[in-house]
Image (tube, rainbow, N blue to C red; front, side):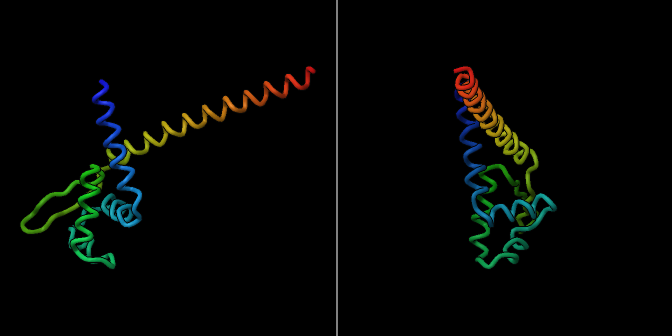
Amino acid sequence: MVEQRATAERQRDRCFRALADPTRRDILARTLEREHSVGELADLYPMSFAAVQKHVAVLEAATLVTKRARHRYRFVRGNPDAIRSVAEALDELERAWEGRLERFEAELDGDRNTEDAG
């Protein structure tokens, strides 16, 4: 159980690191719309083919995209399940933050009530 949680945390970290780069976010958005060859993606950015390949490899390692070979081409498709997982992680963080804010507000209200009674 602890090992599964650690593995899930490492995977989540890979996703967030991958999403930290604007080029990778753009590649992901494009590949969620439709499948692209790596060559098509490389034509869209002012960088080398090898640089785009590296961005795709980071996204693939984070399971945000999948890659398949067809003849001599590599096709990339966004992984909606991984996006849902990232969204769930962000929702979890939001709930934790909201809980902290609610507790903080309750503390403030308690202090105000004490001042009003005094």
